[in-house]
Image 1 (tube, rainbow over the protein chains, first blue to last red):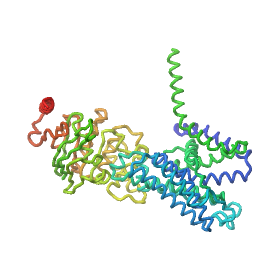
Image 2: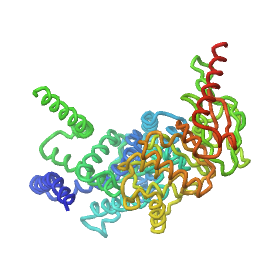
Image 3: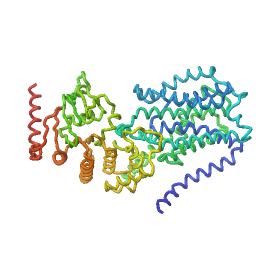
Image 4: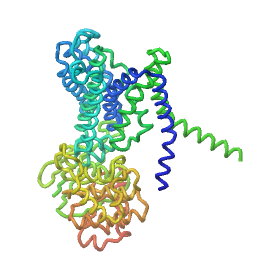
Length: 324
Length: 262
């Protein structure tokens, strides 16, 4: 009973923030803006769930993300341009998995430092993406995408229904996967590698699998983004790791990361929230140039806050002791 | 059962910091042996454990398990038949995963991990039964993350995990050294029970000479990476802590004087 009431009290400030956000959304944004923001939020929740796998589950910051997001966009744009929008989605998944696998092999088999391994893949992808797309960017205005294909069935709500459906599907698959034997081995690998090897699990293989899944999801986000915005851009991946991290961190204000469900929910909720923060910033007339700066600041604040809290409370304690 | 032949491990070979951690070490462990290993700091005890478990590769020599040469097997591959406990209670379990998830991982040791659901209803009943046998009340906290347990509880859980699928060989690397005396005693009793019940061949490092004589059927004394003594049978039965200490310091000082002459 008392733990329950404590839980309720701890939720009050969060509920207030949520209520204020809902009021803001209703007063500041038009309905079409809200729907657009939700769509983009669902697309970017795929990115956040991918980064959740590498950053939270495996506990390794994977910098290949910036490259694989653009890889997904490039593969998707090329195939959509040539009339295969559905194939484009699956091909981008495969391409992302392949790129993630390369990072995984670099880190585990060739003992490259994790951060450097990601940077190497990302840098290589800068050229590869240009090679795939054949140009820095490509417009898809005249081509059919998965969204225009479904237009006849889903009418005006095609974009939001389709992006929500893909998000939900990925959410369910990830939730199930992380409960399987392989999924549990993956989680343990990020949690305690000693224990994993002592339990006859090949931690190298697990890391490679983890990177493949993470980057497949990031690439999927890039592919969906290209089709929904009708442009494939080889530069679309810049800063995506930090954007994804910011999303996860925002989401974790509302959902703890300690269970699989709430960890994934935090990624989705955070990605959507992040899009709404951007939408507000834009509606307030803030230049979109500053959006990446904003995400960098969010990440720094979230990571620094516990340290600042500690040193402030430590300082107050010290002052009190001196006063006495 | 386990045969170690001329095992040698050298750290920082061919540098000024070269250290021979294990030097031409041979021993033969039979089925059902419970061997205790003692020796001072730097004697090579942990190196021996790491060499057997595969977290260190031998520079020379061979390790045979049931006649099979496992010298070049990687750690995770050897873990299919070798269970292991570390001195640090934090090393043996995944802190952010629940008790039942940790047990689930241990339960699939040696088997191929698949896309089947990690823990099913039947497993949970089995886990509860096994946890109950530990007598620590963990059976009521199966959904608790292991990180919230005390060191003793974690070590007891690790022990259960290491022996869940009965290993051919159990390695205990001072697994009670980081615990308070009461908990250490309890964990040691649980260890002895499990080892006896499942007749697990065991190698235990300890700093506690009394314990080294009380548990097991053989004692190996290590010094400077070499086997100094191998005490078993009647000799071991009659051995007292004082006697062993005397023998130990005598041989230790012998090797020390050798070194001084050189």
